[in-house]
Image 1 (cartoon, helix red, strand yellow):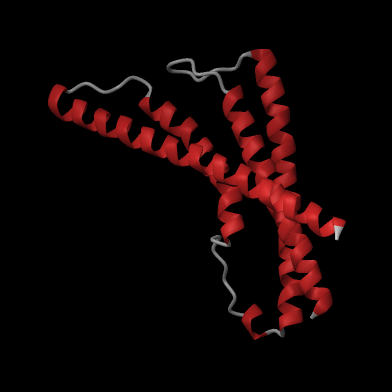
Image 2 (cartoon, rainbow, N blue to C red):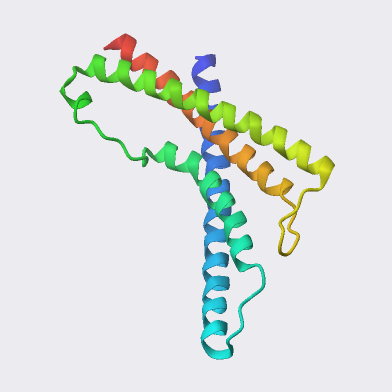
Length: 168
């Protein structure tokens, strides 16, 4: 009973964190769409471009992609090809899912770990973009936070998949 309540609280917290990060990612998409539109219009009418728009877009894409990963995984919206797996039994599919989730979790944890490391290194060295001098460290932090949330979702999915594989 207590474990069930802990699991429910973990799931609710994870859903909330993933939803908030996803909303931030969606907001960055809206901002980048507006700025890119303004840049295109300025080039068309005034033959001038917004300085550093490509750099800004590249950095903002990090926020968009990594902040959306957890929510996408919670919704089960990642691409899944099951040409061969669909022919397996329910238990076989659960075992295969367990293996793939475990591999994905290992990769996500490694990316998170390296992201936090790069964040700390760039925070010390103050590495910045070449054109307009945007510091890199906040974007490594976004990468690490987003991948950490994704890792937690994968951990939840892994536990569910193991239970499914054991029950059959």
